[in-house]
Amino acid sequence: MTERAASSALLTDRYELTMLDAALLAGTHDRECVFEAFTRRLPAGRRYGVLAGTGRLLELIEQFRFQDAELQFLRDNRVVRDETIDWLADYRFSGTIRGYREGELFFPGSPFFIVDAPFAEGVILETLLLSVFNYDSAVASAAARMVAAAGGRPLAEMGSRRANERSAVAAARAAFIAGFSATSNLEAGRTWGVPTMGTAAHAFTLLHDSEEDAFRAQVNALGPGTTLLVDTFDVEKAIETAVKVAGPELGAVRLDSGDLPKLVKQVREQLDSLGAAKTRITVTNDLDEFTIAALAASPVDSYGVGTSVVTGSGHPASGMVYKLVAHRSGDGGEWISVAKKSDGKASIGGRKHPIRRLDARGTAVAEVVHIVEKGDTPDDSGRDLLVPLITDGEVHREHLGVEGTRRARDHRALAMAELPDEAFRLGRGDPVLPTIFG
Image (cartoon, rainbow, N blue to C red; front, side, top):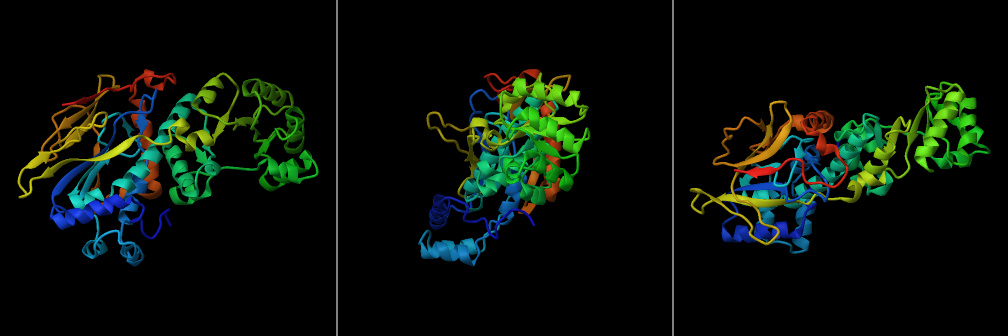
């Protein structure tokens, strides 16, 4: 089973359907159109974004069906005319979508999701696709910064209690795509194949008559390779008790409070003195990319991140929008480019084809967005960024499920390897690649 309701059709805003209703009445609903999703800008100080959510969205588009319950709701609430309800009863997306691979990097103006479809079919996907991409990409972008700051040390996502129950699953998936190694969320493990982890919280220690009794119960159940939480009372005494109970084979200790740089150093020295040199230290105390970077010189073995990753480390949405950029003339003839001209929200009309331009060493130097006709591939030696996602209504299955999630994770690693070194600085700066339209 995958994470989805029987129908995703009402995960939308009312105005998507009222636009459809008016277009059907006007007879403009079946004009061939090109829509594209992009972000106008990255969050302040961010140098790149990581695209996540594609695999989830493609499943939701497959489930975008107006079944009896959805149609009755629209009818009872007089959202649209009866004729439009009849049209919606037969709705199936039949268009074609190309876009960036999930896990790809994006920059301001990157047209990462391009929809070719009649107006009626394309316009009603707007809210659904933006709700998925804006959140999942915010999490993935923050998580990727944390992965870079960790310098190869593993990170686990453990923020389910800081998000709603469905966002928690999406966040775990997005963080995994961005390079996290595991999640505490079991549904993310079942649905998307993300490795799961977790042992005990402070409540388990407080349940027992003594800390030693709690440690012994956990070791008896999970073996000496488990991770013991050692900051419920006195850390130094807890470390001594943990090694006494589990022996030098103790897998790890977890610290969830305190002055971490100082405390980690003391814990490492104590473990070594007790013969537990192979016991790892994991820290989980309100971490973000900056606190992780500050621990780079400390003997930390792994990190657990909660609130900061599921909230995009201060930027819980990605500023993505979905715009109509071209449509055929009313008689089905030539293509007409269209664009919004509002101050601060202007868009660029026309069908587009993006390329990642690389230098001779394979380092990315620019995001080049070609304006093209009829979807032709431009004559450019850079890396082509578009792949087929849906063709004539049929989803390309390699993007879905557990396998699609792992493919996205692998591609994210390849795309990150193309970035210049300055991309990984945590200080404020402009996007590391310029976006060039031509």
